[in-house]
Image (cartoon, rainbow, N blue to C red; front, side, top):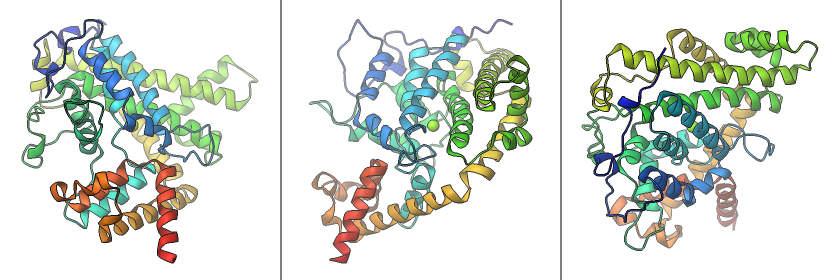
Length: 380
Ligand code: MG
């Protein structure tokens, strides 16, 4: 089967709408605009802070678990490989993968949930994609002429739309990001590359942590059982941990190949000949096949039931909620205690949003330090 979708790829010719930036930027012959965006993202402070943010397990438990940064790098290599196999724009796909989690608060999803609850009490909410756009558009300060990283429209659109669609009615502030159209395949595939990365990594880290057992996984997750049996046949007598590692690699390959093939099939099935055809199609085309999608859902459910909601991690989640909520309330009640650079934004952004922005940017260790300080201050 021919799987080259280059005619449906983002082309990025000079003058293309997706290459436009809010502020004019000098032409650099040595790098493409998306390569330049990749550099801007990799050199951003918010990108470096991903090293100190929880993916699933905190770094306090072991140095071997994924952080948001190493997870991001894993997503980037999968996204680039998928884009290359399909003839899509590899630089755009890689750049979007590198930036896809930059808006995540400390403490993984528990931190995000807590921040969302805090903001809901003030009539809004927290969305990590919208926060990511605020980071790259406003918070990063590397240029004399403007705030933000001045990224291309193609990357800014993908930051918002890689995982879901946003309506202009609910999000008038996102005007200009082509909300009435589907995103290019380079953006659509990021969410699936993210799935492939964490479905593999969370089983790996889960076993490493001792919270999951290889035998139990194979009893309940069909795709892992099948991969494990395959590698067992090839490597008889080898220790189960090595077989499990091989099985996970095989599973990652199966998921990746399925995404490549099924995205090509979907695109060919609608007769898409250009990026415009991808954009106007009512649904996304980068998808797993129905069979693999069913197996993905089974594994995801297993991870929810046995890992994400297990007592050991729920204890961490409770702590995360306590810390985020206590700090949010502390600065809401006493905004003068905010750092001056944040306090200055209160008039324009509103206090609740400024406090949430400050907290969302923190690493796990920094927020715990802040929490210890305010507890000491309250006691005195
Ligand atoms: Mg992710």
